[in-house]
Amino acid sequence: MQLHDAACARGEHSYIDPATGYTVFTRLEHLARGECCGSACRHCPFDYANVEPALRARLQRVRGK
Image (cartoon, rainbow, N blue to C red; front, side):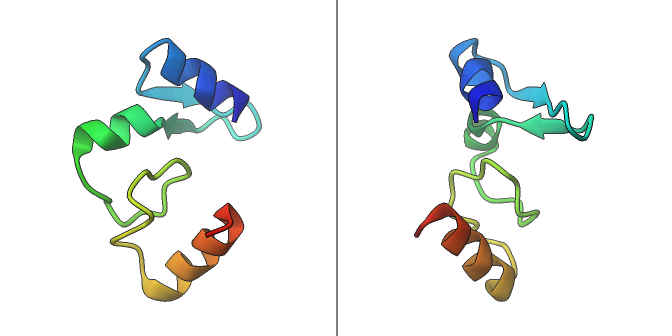
């Protein structure tokens, strides 16, 4: 979360996950897109609205919702 928060503070729409090397979209990128893409993104601000229901429920539990 520290990398995500720092990237958001700088206004960046993505950062590189050092554990995987993957580019990860920040909350800012998702908000700019305007809706959930259904890919179960790590920082989805839309509560995984378009993610398959069983996976959505699991992700929401992990987030504490």
